[in-house]
Length: 356
Image (cartoon, rainbow, N blue to C red; front, side, top):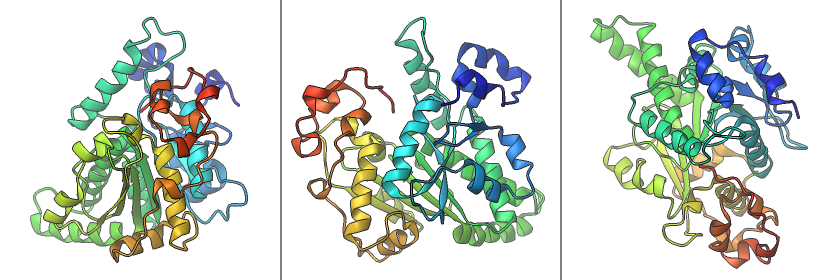
């Protein structure tokens, strides 16, 4: 794989971000596009300047699993605590499990090699996520995602967006920003009648073109328009406590948001329920159980709309033998049922990366 220092040379940063990037090298890649297979990073401004942005992304930046038909790729915003090389590793697994093309829009981490204090950098990631959730800080991810959405609407190009954990917060805010930009571009702030017309056009256009698929949703305010699927495992603390729930969505009349919640897999209070690597395996089996092609999110949304989707249970999944490589801690592994990682404890290496 390409060395991170060589990757960083391709990115043009604003001068005011340089001190941050010196202290925390992964911040250099914040909001940039990355091919999860080769781990090559592409400067976002260079990509968006292309006359054919989405074809460029599909052909040069998207990672497709072996024998994939290349019919779909999703722009994916990872969760917190994942340096660019780690988010690429997990995205490759996402793509392979769900037979879907993936392009990372990198959500940078404060983690770095040889930190002065091991516990400080992970804490900074959590503080950063809390600030983002409160709307008190921006991120290149938010602005760049909004630019991609606006471009897709202008070009009438379908766009699939996906996110995990902290990434869902950034994506939610990006979609709200995209809506504001879309309306502001066509109607002055004082022209309420015209703004109402363009808000209706946003609803129509985004519903036709923008599809969102989220893991472990951590946000409540999702702008109306796009088609949403929120997927989680029972016991996921973020999805159950910090996000919009099925009950709240029904109360708000949010028929555009569909929920796919798998049966409990982990003991109560286990944060491993928030680990999307386990969710993707359950989702793969759900596609198969319903006779759908793995990765057919359009028909998945339709079956959820019809309340006719048969949801896979943990016992039905043919769990890969390397699931131990994707847990967040040795203690978490010990809480996983035997049918998931049978006989794996003896082979577990305590070097597993704790991420969220």
